[in-house]
Image: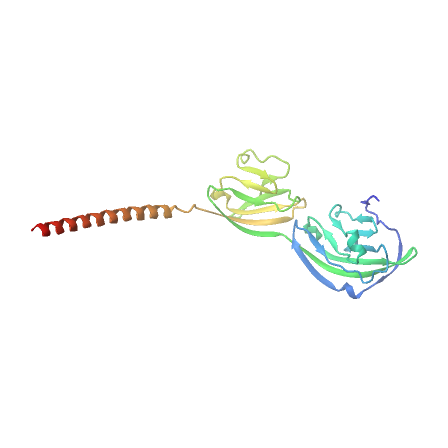
Length: 266
């Protein structure tokens, strides 16, 4: 049966009563933006062959399922699911893909029960869901590539602020060519933006923003000077010293042999 993706509820019932359940205590769950998350839930009873489960967040429908029919709420299309097989075994956990910052909030799951058009909703689980952004400190050597992870397809642009107070400068926008002055330095790879040949001017704060201008990640970058290649120099010095010492030892042995021979003949 085809999935429903409209903004209207999948199942039109007259619900006259909302009941609580011992399973409905508030628990906390968190993850980083762009990751997958599972909001745990177990049915308080399994009296129906095809349980009707409903997940809500701030009174808006996130997901509904009864049997093979399902409904995904606005903004959750293609991202929310309660697998049918798991639900029929009593597991009503909500699976969320590519989690967004705007997904943060309180989620509640309900088991809808009743044999007629008059239904009751029984609260199964309440979850405080927190979505975190990334906060990273990065060090890169001058002349090396600076790599910024985008973390999620939600990324729309990268902005930069130098170490001193300044306006945020847009360095990269998804689907657009970079500014001509930067085109030779910036390239987009799968899931990342790479800045070639980092220099002191690249030191500062970078932010990866989503379509709402929310920061998916904040990266503070420090550019350091390359480490001098002292180890190789010391090794060369040691080699030279060893050669000199070996030469002196050989000369000393030769003198001792000569002295012994002279003493023998005398």
